[in-house]
Image 1 (cartoon, rainbow, N blue to C red):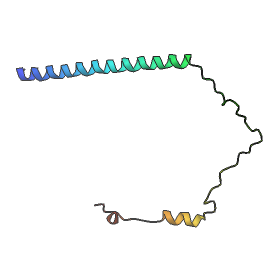
Image 2: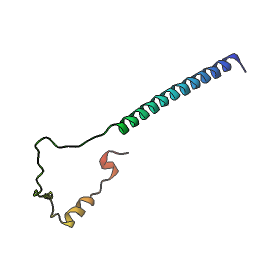
Image 3: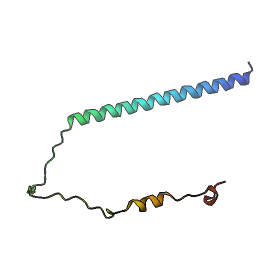
Image 4: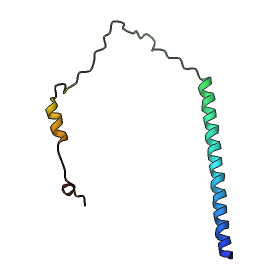
Length: 93
């Protein structure tokens, strides 16, 4: 094995070691952040309360949203899907 081959292998070994160490550091930091956020979620108590003086109206009605195009015929829908384009018309090879 020539000295040049040994230098190339040594370079790849150093790059691999550096990539592994950076990856380990990244995942340690991500794991620490995740554990901190989990402890904060456990400790935090969220109380949902309305604004002072607000009253919920129990007689309010919920109305559905009306569709604008409720009466589309089936023939109009099928005619749009029957358009055929050749590849030469679209500029394909």
